[in-house]
Each structure stands twice: as structure tokens, then as C-alpha cells.
Length: 414
Picture 1 (spheres, rainbow, N blue to C red):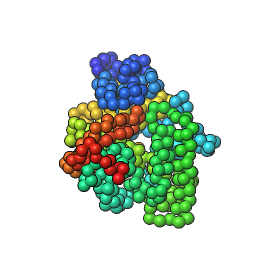
Picture 2 (picture 1 turned 30 degrees about the vertical axis):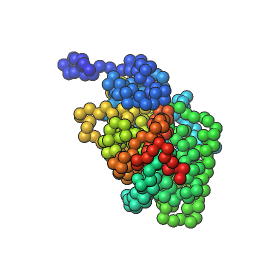
Picture 3 (picture 1 turned 90 degrees about the vertical axis):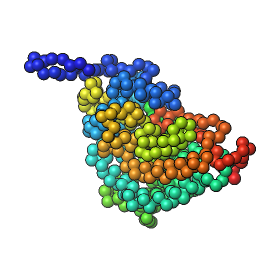
Picture 4 (picture 1 turned 180 degrees about the vertical axis):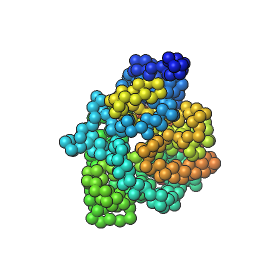
């Protein structure tokens, strides 16, 4: 970028670009992540090569692609995490519209700023202590061996029987959720993710019904563990929340958030990593490079609360912003290589469960590597992908364990 001269001879940067000047072409709109999910790397790389910051008129949001610019937005308090709906209005106040799922979502740590966020994060960390996480490692290894056996030749769908099942059962053990409730928990968690994540604000009544079922279940668990506390994660959450004087509605909402964030990104991370390792790159099973390479959550949303210049662009108060974590990870320049990847976010909102996710990834990567050495390969049936713009995942990844014939009985049927 060229500079201009002012009267005293000192250089200064040209005026910041406005929306019109910073607009990206239609083919680079992030809405295409829905239409062409498997072309995300190509598209986001093209965006970043074009500029570090863009205005996307097709989703009415600023796109932050550069590593330095992403780090700035994620740490600057002038960018709020309180999300907007598709019409650009803030979510309803929980004090006036308690009956809506939006009101419940607005209570989550994920969507709080400043002191409110730090207070809720302190409570969440009572569940995610290093000691509690490390105590899960032996059972994680047993579960990984159970779900991905090396001594039972046959076919299985890695997504359905390993990538989804592993984090869900680990989460159940961490929190103390009955195994019989896990199917309902998964359905509710999927619903919450559909409400919070992505580019569109869903109003599907069935999705909201499933989310409400999980919220009501979380409410019951909070009250049950207060009356009969134990050593489980939910009891620890309730004790810490009560010490902070939180209302039960806030505790239940953040329990729902812990449930959803505890396993929503892991299936995509595991399935994409194994697929990459089986088709092109064995190094796909190496942490932390795999986290940056996959970036399980591609972007996070913010709202500007003041006028601020980022990457040579003027972002106005009230503008929506999408921080493209994947773009920043995939196009880090040589000057950025020493900086930690942004797969877990950055700054105060860095994922509270990052250590838990890293341990889960490490345990499953070891097992997946052992499976590859034992000859695991893709089965004949084709792979399938979801169309989630933010949380990419394979929805079907058939694999074959051991030396078997095409007529082998699937492990899932045994």
C-alpha cells in the first residue's frame, strides 16, 4: 500500500476504505461455504490473498481474514460477542422473553463480554480443571480402543460409530450424565448449535423444541445436584455458580453451552483428519498442526460497538463482523508462524475447554495412527459431507479394518 506526504513531510496511510470500496466479489462471499463446503480452503485462501479485511454484502458483515487483524478483533473490547439475528437486531432480553430459546442462549458465557464473561468462565473452569481432565485419560484410551478395535476385521462408519460417539461418551463421564440420556443430549446439542452457529438464524420449531428439551433437562440436573451433590462435573459447576450467586437459569444455560461445545466440533475434527490421512497426508494426524489445518470452527461473530479501523477498513458501530479463524490459520505469513493457531479462538474468549479437546484429540489420534499402521483404509462406499458453513464435518466415512473381503460383516451389525 502506498503512502502519502503531509505538510511536515511525514508519511501517513490513505483514508480507510468504506463498505463499497472493501466489498468482495460474489464468488468470494462466505455464503458460498454453504453451497460449496469442500471448497472452503480454496475460497478462504483466495479471500485472504485479496485482502486481510473485506465487506461481504451478501451476508452484510465484515470478513476478517488476516492473522493480525483477527487477533485484534478478538482482543479489542470494542467488538462485542453479543450476537445478532439475521435482521441485525440484538437477541431478546432474557428478562422479558424467557420463553424463547434466544433468551436462554443470550445467558451463555459465549455471548457475554467483559466482567460478565470472566465471571461465567471462572464457573466453567470449575468443571474443566487440569486434574479433572487428566483423570479422564485412562477411560478415554479404553473407549478409543473399544470404538476403533484393531483385532476385529470389518467395515464401519467412522463418523457414526467413532467420531460422534467418542466425545459424547467422554462428555457424559466428565459431567456425570446418565448414558441412557445421551441420545437426547446429542439431539438437543445439535439443536443449540443450529441456533447459535452458522450464518442464518434458524426459526425451525422442531429445532427449538429439541433445544428447549435439553434446557429443561439441564435445569433439572442443576437442582438435583444441588440437593444431592457428587464428584461429577455438574456438581462442581453448581457449587462454583452458587458461590458466584448465579441464578439457576444462568447455570442451566451455561451447562447447555458446555454440553454443546464439548462435542460439536470434535466429530468434524476427527473425521476430516482421518480422511485426509487416508487419502493424501499421513501428517494430518499430528497435533497441533492438525488443529490449524482443520480449524473445526471456521469463524466467530462479533459486533462493533464503536467506529474502528481494522486492516485499512473503517468498521462502523453496529456493523457485524465474522472473524474467519480458518482463513487466518491457513494463510499465516512467515511473520505469523511463531503465533499459536487460532483454532480455539484468541484472547479472553479462547475456548475454556481447549485442554480437554487437545487431550481427546491426542488420544484418538494415537488410536487412529495405530489403525492406519494395522492397515485401515477407506471402504468402497463413498464419503459424505455436511453443508455447515461454520462446523464442517464428514457425515459418512466408511472404513475397513484389517484384511477383509468385500462381503465382510460390518462391525456395527455384530
